[in-house]
Image (cartoon, rainbow, N blue to C red; front, side, top):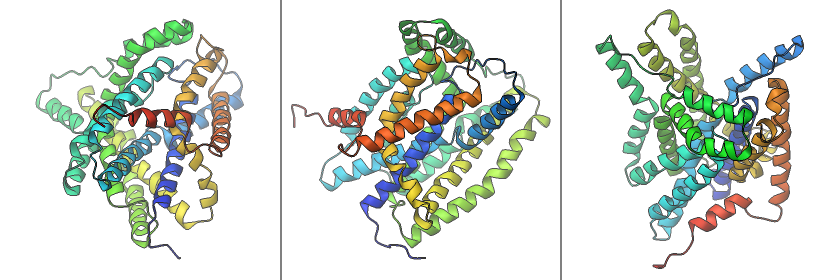
Length: 395
């Protein structure tokens, strides 16, 4: 096995784009079989489709649900490091500019949330400020904070409090009434009605779900971990990094299966909801992180060590235009499934939705390859960058 021991910027960016493309592909497939947060499926009578619906649903959720977003979050932190480090090398401080960049992302995310109430970028725009808070701390300190956040400290606190106070009752579904309002608008409302409902009620429902499922602290921890990958030059192709990613793959694999198996048997031993809910969430979060480690390290190792590098390399253009792809699928998905568009939620089961997701992925994939032949960035990536670096009166 021969590896280049001299890391290059292009190698790091290339594998980052491949991973980002892989993550957005997974997010696209999950969104389509969920029909963009519209969980209302027609009754299926064909036994073959009933079988394929179940297989596809379980497989896609097992492989990508909660994991593709983890990869996306890691790469968000890594991208911050690349930009921050580049400015430091020029003697400039990127933190103020990044704060403005997050404001822009929040605006973009709010616009997107009117089309798709289940989007993630509002959370990214809000949680992204933790990177400004920790980016000048030592690597050891950041690693310690990230580890604490990834272990779901709020759920551990809730679990301990429930053990101390046997009468404690929790509201594990306070987001459900808001989702019901949103789903009604998706099924019956016009375009303007879904926009008005989604921008407020939809974001309450979505952020409530994220809080209940530990996504806030997990995302912050993943942002920091991605930044640390950048600090350690972890994407360069070197003997040291290959060994590191092999170790990550082995540890993640060993960790995942017992933790994932424990989730299924936990209800047999815990009856109290106030104990079962946080315990299950902690285990699900840890299993998702472990499986993310398997996917993340696995893609890197396949990319650097096997002939499948050529196949994975084709995902790089798709990853380079991840913002454009992510936002455009919200408009496409809303038009296909919601009442204001074609209203296909009335007619499409999981199998058909999955095939539609593959079709949209391929359309975006070939569009990206065509677009980047004559442009350095995707259209929305270019606009976000231009707005980020808009000159102020002091410059």
